[in-house]
Length: 423
Image (cartoon, rainbow, N blue to C red):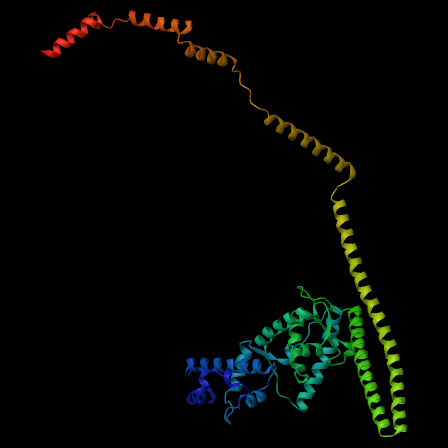
């Protein structure tokens, strides 16, 4: 049975005819290029789907043929598919992928000049004597899942050293997935997103340490980080040991009461002796736990002191850079004097702009009073009379050739108008 959940399988798996074509041998690309491309693409998607659903980041030709067995039929073209995927850089050999980038030139030189030739010779001889199937890594899937894992690590353990066991607990994975998660962590390490350290070269999930800082370049795992991690791990182990011993004390009490109720005094005394022995062990464990916690606090304080010291150094460097720019006490005094003068000039300008505008309107006030007085007396002022007289003289001097207007008294004129109206 194929090792992919049925609800995750593509729709074409419901069509037996198409599945038969898919599982049949791959024809030459020159005969039918479209069929060849479609078949390679379909198998590439199936291989990635199998790895994703099973949290498997390495496979061989044999393991794929077993995992993709469908109704007792194994794929006949996987060898060509794997070869094409390797050409397209969709997969790469596990040995190539797991090569770790050295941190220093010295380590690089030692690996190039000694360890790499020795390892190559050993592996070459081993493969000749007992050849093993080549394992491949689905590179794109590893990149995707490793970034997801990194985000989860940063969310819970940023700037903190943890072990591979903590990673497995974080992902709810069993220890059988140890190698698969090492592939993800190696991908992050090779891209400088995390740092990895194996304590004493022991390949164990408790001694495989990881540190993720979330920076562009990962922070290295220091001796201080390792010391804090080991103390925290021992602290948890001692606490669990004390808890189990206290549970044993409760069991001894229950057993002693049971023996007393049955009249077995010697057995009851044996239970009490065991209880006292466990209590002494708890006291020793408690003292050890106290010592571990004191050392842990000291190391944590030392880390804080280191951070404070680094802060002081950066602040001092900033001060020195500022002073090296040419600033001194005399220049500061001169600058402050100029600032004060500039502020005074600005204040004078503002005061000047704020002054009210005054108009000379005394003559206008006198003329306005005279006009008001004329209106109140009903007489024409001498000045206005002079202006009227001047205007009249000007009109008389003009030769307008206007007809003469007869002078008729108002009374006779009215009578004449009345007689004209009657006629």
